[in-house]
Image (cartoon, rainbow, N blue to C red; front, side, top):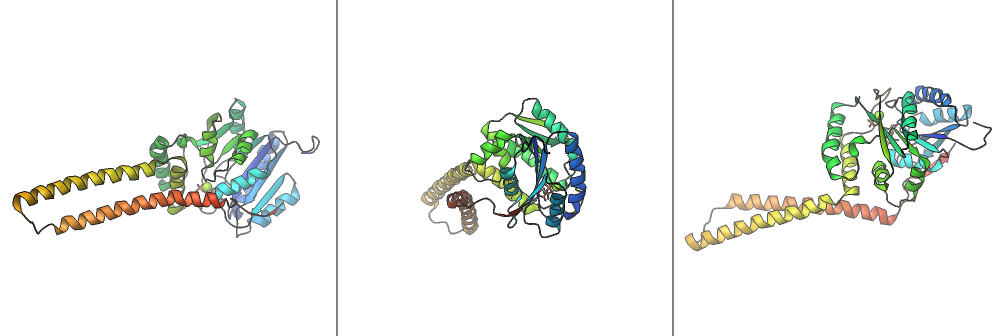
Length: 310
Ligand code: UDP
Ligand code: MG
């Protein structure tokens, strides 16, 4: 790693949260792969607020070799913010990102790099066969078929196992937008995006950090940060419901003119009130989601806070 002084070709950024049982096997497999590439490299672990023994293991790695570094965040800020924190400290010409649970086999890294060398600026390692739970795979189908149609980004081809040219990371740092949807930003900027099929393994140890709620909120984030479609759906449903109300009103008016007062209709009223109230609340909620994002963007809080760096 010495010799050319501080020149670094590859930076591998690995965000992690409580992965103590995965770090040693990951580190030994990864360093073997990186050494084989015969270019100066660095491994940047980002400890996203782990409460297990992860950090002391990372310290050991750093003591053994200064090419492994660690950024420790003050608390858990989420995988995407942790990735950004890692990006901010990288020096490599090519920046790779991967998960810490060995679901992304380090041995596949040369494939990502080879694809990048074909002239792409962003390369995603996509999975032929996913080892996630049924539920996660259903989620991927949802992304593929629904989100992909709605967003100006090839969402079905995204993954956290990526290789990026340095300029992508630099441009990303210049964007003031705060979103968890980093891949969306990368694609939106217009970089040449390639994909390469890589293996996907079972999680080596521990459990996934994304439950149902976490995933739903991630998808919703993707949608809301890249399109105003939910707002338009709100408007459209308002128009539709308004028309239905108008037709109903005419119906009752004509009935009144023809037959006089009609007392029954309790069910109709209850149904209408609940349906309308439901739609109104939903639309208010959607507006609130956008407003909330404006609020956090305006406050301009940093996306992460660093506790210390090794
Ligand atoms: N992760 C993180 N911060 C979080 C959640 C997850 O840094 O708040 C890391 C996690 O340790 C792993 C990667 O992000 O290295 C992917 O997480 P996980 O394997 O739980 O997700 P899945 O593979 O199930 O999508
Ligand atoms: Mg995983």
